[in-house]
Length: 69
Image (cartoon, rainbow, N blue to C red; front, side, top):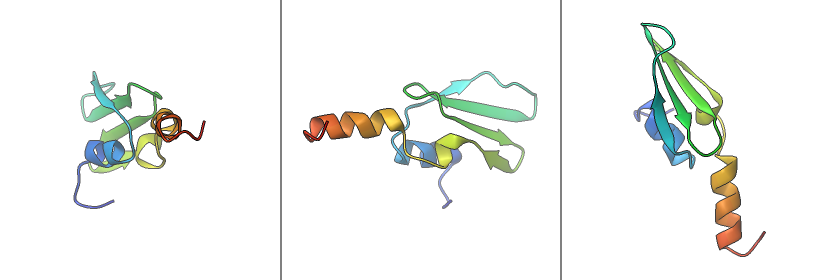
């Protein structure tokens, strides 16, 4: 990942991120409103499927717009 925040990285992959209330005091969580993939950050550790793959819903929308669906 580059110098972007985890949320910016996920949004660059087509996700529409929305902050979820923290599940622990030291953690933050964002979830894609479209595909429900998440990004979690616990102190300096960042993980979640939203930073690993493109949003399936965004990909399907793009294919539909481009006439490939």
